[in-house]
Image 1 (cartoon, helix red, strand yellow):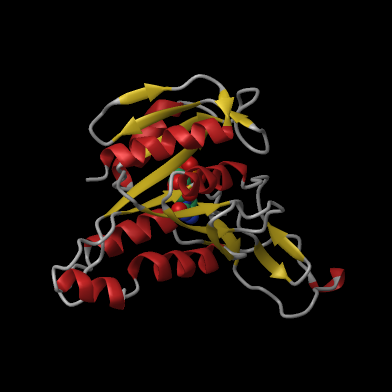
Image 2: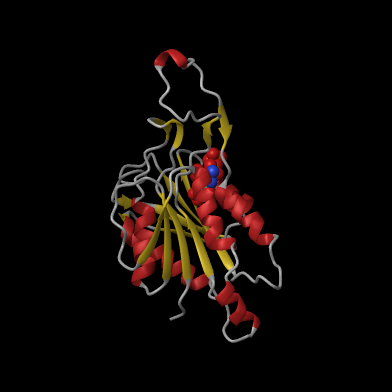
Length: 240
Ligand code: CTP
């Protein structure tokens, strides 16, 4: 079996307004950790970039902890876009082909952050009733765009395939298709987070895998680890 490189993001991000307050969401990281575990169990090389979660690192997985969306973007860019001297040199020498990389973006990235983050705890008297927010980067979109524009012959990147998640409450398949197209993904995993046993914090999930080529695979309710195994197998299938 071919060995792939997986870079997986998981969990929520936290967007601080001072050292003791932040904006976030209920993601627990279970789905992303399951993907990392399933990929490592198949013998792939796995890096897991995790927001603040209380889960144990799966066996054989390299873990990078981050807090905010901007930290997560920097960590992802380091993994996917920074020069790979040894690999690049070997590939240029045509000794070995570069290992295909799959970026699986399961993280529930906060879309906004407070415009300012105070260095010290804000006292109630110092705070106004409204909070000014600014948009966070879209990690998946940014990385996709940068990969498309970074084909320098002196810094070859391995072929990189993007896999996204779409956690929706309505129009699940249509929204997932839109995101797959707009973020230029190879595959998107759609799930209805309003459904019992699917979504944030559960040990099970019910998802539909939508491929770039239009194929649709609807999976039954299963454990997140079983879903993760199906995702990893699907990635093995579309990687050359
Ligand atoms: N994503 C990301 N960076 C963001 C937001 C989302 O990388 N700032 C990734 C998620 O990890 C997921 C995919 O993009 O793989 C879709 O995320 P989702 O929250 O479902 O959608 P959004 O792009 O935020 O779009 P919308 O708010 O319209 O639902």
